[in-house]
Length: 353
Image 1 (cartoon, helix red, strand yellow):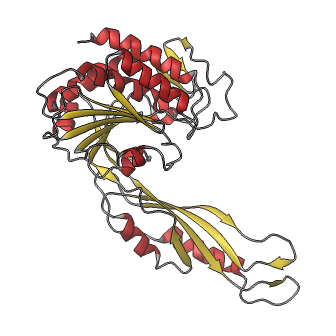
Image 2 (cartoon, rainbow, N blue to C red):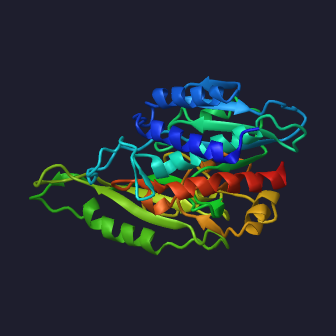
Image 3 (cartoon, rainbow, N blue to C red):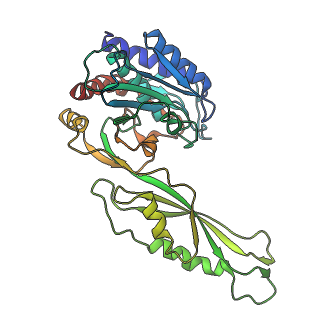
């Protein structure tokens, strides 16, 4: 069995290698190769599906439920505020800098190390599955949602995202809507009582004032935000319509289908782009949650989206780092956060396994 101290140092070294290797969503082939090689160096038999790398514990028993450890190895583009090389994985003053260090490389390498710790254990209550997945940042078609077709049915999941190792026991889903305010196109010089731009104010006010009745204890109310508006191409022509984009963050009291039905009350045409990114949660009395609480961790509901959205099983979001650092310039994670996360993951899993 690997000593925890050794796994901590090897996980940090792997994270530095991943940071040094560009892995934009859809372009994660090189980081996938690093992850696969790292697992194989620890005697793990693993497989790859597109840019997703996965493995199951050595003594798999198909009659037992499966517990998934998942995080992603793709990143967003480095924003323009960087003053450092985003792929220079340096450690300064206890901080490991680099693109993807906090979101979600730190959680990923700690979950990989945790899986290696348990890989050869026998007589566990669950089969343990680890999956380092692609295209999380873009909700792309070739990430966890695609890999789930290959994996055995998952009963429970821990999704690694920066939560300061507190327990996100629920996560809001997302539905993006395209709204169209229709009117009559005309020359600006002529009378027009059906200018869609003039209608837009009342429609936007309708969205602003619309309330969803069901409020979640852990996630609060559903949040609807108008995030984009577009109309017209030239100064002397009234357009035929105004286009809006709506971002709706869905709590665990509604299905996405129910949200879509409610949006049909709007005084304009509203169409959902997709209904697949649902809210997710895990009962507070679940053994994993109770083990985390016993270890002094807090529970909360997360407003940010992750790969939990494509899971239909009980799932918990848990990982080192701070969500507020995600996608920021000069992204970093504290080395101490990484060192503390691995034994905490192991301690929580021991209660379930």
